[in-house]
Image (tube, rainbow, N blue to C red; front, side, top):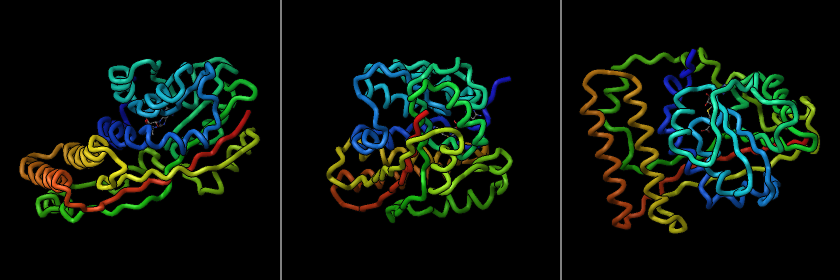
Length: 283
Ligand SMILES: C[S@@+](CC[C@H](N)C(=O)[O-])C[C@H]1O[C@@H](n2cnc3c(N)ncnc32)[C@H](O)[C@@H]1O
């Protein structure tokens, strides 16, 4: 049966893709490259587990031009989107706890914000099985970040009224096991060791998204603002409520204003920083 649990109930395809495209932008590659410790030119076979709509696979395609990259996820909508939008990567629907690959068939396994949701013995055990001896497991996990929105992006009265009127199930994420296996910064490397990996290292990549910082070109700054807009709109649409015109208009109006301020050079210095733990282990 087709699985669409994540994309329909937890994070939508477009929001996830746009937000991850920013986090894996080339301007952050220096931080990832150091932590990954991979030969850029080697013909590596890389498997991304829980690849979602494919933004990390897309970045790996650029960063490791001679690598053969495969992305798997059990969500049908993510894989369909990735197949349509990301070229040069093989995508397939598969379960991380039963990988459809032979033993010792990959040089690298990698995942981003996935270990938190899958039972660790199965998650890391399968990666250990499909990695070649000496192969590298890279487990990336988003930690608490910083978020300081621009005042023009404050919640509008229309949004407040909308969210008060729709009924939300507070326990919904728990129902889907989201974050059930979340680990602390100390527990994650210990979990890799417990599952057979050695030579464990930890690194942190700090992904700073501040549109007004002149180090970012206009295209990147606008992509940051648009990713936030898409997230807000997708959250509203996902409620399948009637009469959303007013709230959608209000959301669009505030993001249009943010873009106007950016283009006028009226700095807001709003920022979103995500801190990403990268644990590396060797089979
Ligand atoms: C937080 S999302 C991250 C997606 C992607 N790594 C990204 O950052 O865009 C977690 C992903 O894990 C996938 N997932 C959860 N359990 C899975 C399983 N047992 N097998 C394969 N994928 C799974 C979900 O479908 C979802 O795409």
